Amino acid sequence: MSGEGLAIRELLKYQEIQSIDVVDIDPAITNLSKENELISRLNERALENSKVNIIHQDAFTFLKEGDSHFDVIIIDLPDPSNESLARLYSDAFYKLCLKRLDRDGVLVTLATSPHLSTKAFWCINETLRYAGFNYTYPYSVCVPFFGNWGFIVAKQSPEFTNSLRSDIDMRFLENENLEHLFYFAKDIRAHDIDINKLDKPILLDYYLDHWKSLQGEKR
Image 1 (cartoon, rainbow, N blue to C red):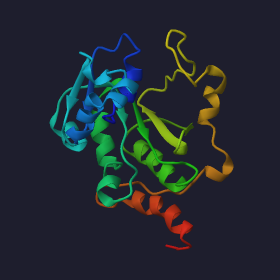
Image 2 (cartoon, one colour):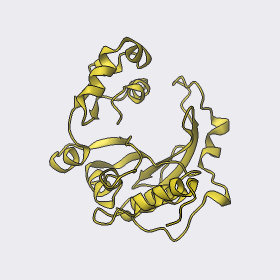
Image 3 (tube, one colour):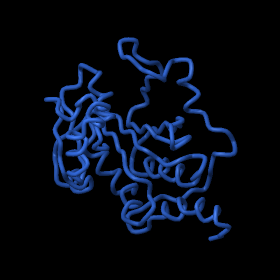
């Protein structure tokens, strides 16, 4: 989860949440998010909440060496623009997540843009399924500055809530537009996509395809 505290601010609206572990390898990010007045005002000082435990560690190492289990795992990574980052979207990483997730738990991950990097988006979806997640729910939303961006919910059990809670204040999302987030038009669906593996990070090739095309290059 990203260390700027904005996702944590939203999670803390759910009173039933008992604790939140924030795993971010860079202490400079979390320190800035706590000390900078503008950022801390935006995140409503979420990082200082007693429910929040900040862990400065590589996410792969945290999952591999720890033994605690979670109801929800939220993955907010940079785009897979190099081999090191692409490996964090691998089947090996997702298998570690699955091992640390409760049976009825939920994983949600950032998954690049289904419009700009269509094959990369669906590669992440297929990799999650290959890693052992029985059910995946890809969706996309319009994020200011970034544009239309993709995410994927992954679960072991088929139960999926498709309505919003009335007791949680949401600024943009409402039930009327919720189901549309999970629909993808024909031109942004992809088939015959390879799995992203630790020793063969094909995701990097898929991701770079779009940027190469902008420069008139071909693979």
